[in-house]
Length: 375
Image 1 (cartoon, rainbow, N blue to C red):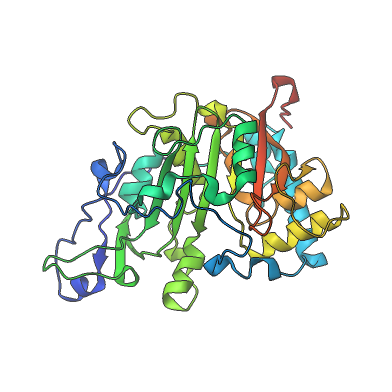
Image 2 (image 1 turned 90 degrees about the horizontal axis):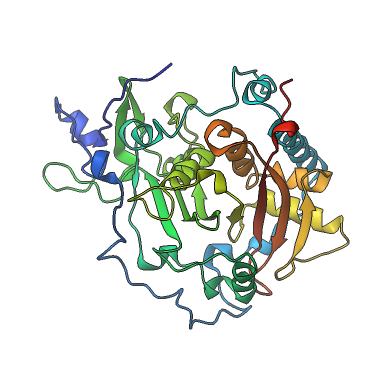
């Protein structure tokens, strides 16, 4: 079923209370929402500059307690492993057969958000926009440690910002939105209209780099609408208020389609080879990672090349079914028609430097036609 596009209006609740018949249209949505040139006039914060050395005693701010997370419980581990095993099996299924494995079953595993509609749905329907960029947003350099640079060299992934790597920053709600009198409208007071229904802006955000020539996506920030709304309001969002386009997998798909140069788009979307979840701080994922390493007799993360976990095994499946792994599984599984039939075949855990938060790397390979099962 094709939806009719409705232009989103992000407005303040104060505007609605004052009885404006025509809501204030967000000026950054719509056709002008795509960044066509490297950002200018941005914050020239150089904290990621190549000459900055990051020692193991570096203060990671909100990340400073990442290593204190407990090992995954039996319940967490079994739940993640079961989810990862299901994802692994659906990689080899046709989109129809994979959809039948969902609970509840679906006619197809493919996402509704395709190359033909995702940008309209993203910017003009479900309240997302291109959020503010800083100069160093696309810098994936020595800030992450020498081990990270060694990984990029080994995998032949160029990391020159705004050339090799283009950074995407999608935000749900506009940080600097103002009303017709020039007064700021906080994100927690913003709403938008989709298909005749009013929904709250959630403050969700996703920031990631795309390097399409080498086939890599590097995820640095991901806060879901559910979590972001609770951060803003101190309570859970009603399910009917969530944007239908909310999965990190779909946001990554939009960025991947845009490629390393949104002027031209990604010339080869079938070339996805690597997804990096940078500096993981999710406690549940960290607990699962620690348990997987413990199963190898290790009690800490290793600098690149780190440790490998084939997804055909229980440990790899638990990592795939973790909070940081599921978006990758969904991305591969729900875009079969355009991405091609792919599988996550291996997960590598490593750090860029001793004492740094871990990075999870997903190796992705195309499937041969004779590996695809129709039933």
